[in-house]
Amino acid sequence: MLEDVKRFDMQRPPMRQHLLPLAWLLAAGTLIPHKNKLTKVNMEGIQPPYLLLCNHNAFMDFSVATRALFPHRANYVVAIDGFIRREWLLRLIGCICKRKFTRDITLIRQLKRVVDRGDIPVLYPEARYSLCGTTAVLPESLGKLCKLLKVPVVTLICHGHHVNAPFWNLAQRKVKPTEAEMTCLFTREQLEKATVAEVNAAIEAAFRYDDFAWQKQKGIRTPYAKRAEGLEKVLYQCPHCRTEFRMRTEGTRLFCDSCGRVWQMTELGELQAEEGETIFAHIPDWYEWERANVRAEVAAGTYGFSCQARVDALPNAKGYIDLGMASFTHDMTGFTVEGAYKGESYRVHIPAASQYSVHIEYEYLGKFGDCVDLNTDRDTLYCYPKDCLFAVTKMALATEELYQHYERLRKASLGESDRREALA
Image (cartoon, rainbow, N blue to C red):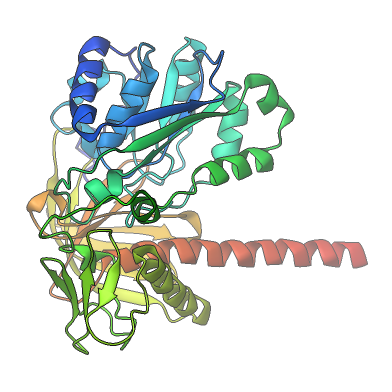
C-alpha cells in the first residue's frame, strides 16, 4: 500500500533546539493567565543531560515543560501528525518524530544522540492526552530506556490542565492556579544501582494523578455553561441500565437515552443524579467501571466490534491521503483494516498481544468524527467508524485489556514450562 509514497525520514538526527527565548516567551504568555505554580523537588545540582518524563493532559503541558527547562535545550518526542505541513519548524525547535505505540529502535538512537551532546530528551510516555484526567498506561520498557541512557531521571507532573481543557471538550475553563511538580527520581548514581523493576515502580508512583480529585481538593470551580458537553465520549455506558453508546450531553447535563437517567456535572467536576442514586459521582470511577466491564468481555472471549470506516493514511508530514472506505474490525485477535486503494487490495493487522495501548481522537480536526489511529513502522491509519453505534473509548480500553490478557497467558505459559522442566 502506498509503495510509491515517500515515508517520513525517521533516521534524520534531531537538531539542537533553536528559538529558545521565543519559545520561553510564548510559554510564559500561555501560563501567566493560569498563574501556574512550579515546584522543584530533589533538583538541586541536577544539570543536563537528564531524561524528562511528563504527564499529558493538554497542550499547555508543553508550555510548563518549556518554562521548567529554561534556559537549557531540549528535544521533544512528538507524534507524526504534529509535523503536518510544518516539519521544518518542528525540526528547527528540536522535535523528534514518533509513530505512537510502536516498538521503535530508531527513537532510542535519537534519544541517545540527545543525551550524548548534553541536552534533555523530553518524553510524554502516556503517548496521548488523558481521557479523564487520570494516568494512562505507561510502557513497560521505560525502566530499560532509563538504564540505557544512564542519565538522571526527572518527572514533570502537571495538575489542572485536564479540568481546564479536557480532551473531550477543549474549550478553556480558565482554571487557576494550575500546578506542576518537577522531581528528580534518580540521580545518575542512584539509577546505576536500581533495577529495571525499581525504576518502573518509581515512575509509576510518580505518575499517579487525578485531575478531578485535585480540582475538588483545591475547591476550584468551573462555571462554564457547557462543561458536560463531550463527556459522553468517555462515559459511553449507563451504570443503571448498562446500555452502551446511548449517552448524550447538553450544557451541564449528561443523559442516558435508553433509561432516561440524567446527571448534572457540578462546577467542582462531580456528577449528581437528578433522581435516585448517584452511583458514580467521581468521573474516573465511572470510567474504571467501564474498563472492568470490558475486561470481563475479554476474559470471556466475547469482545468484538466490526463496521465500515473511512480511512486516511499519514505516511509523511505532507498531509493525509484518503484511502476511502474499508472494513474495520477490533476483536480478540487485534485490529484489522481491509480495503482497496487505486484498485489494489490491502490488509493491515495489528495483533492484540503486540499493542499495549492505542491512540484515539474525539471529533478529530472537526472533519469526520471520532477515530482510532493505528500505527505500523511505516504508516499511520486514521479510521473513522461510520453508520454504527460505537465508542472509540471502549476500543482504547479493550486494547489495553487485551494486551494484559495475553500477557497473563504468556507468563502463565512460561511458568508452566519452567515447572515442567523442574519436574523433568
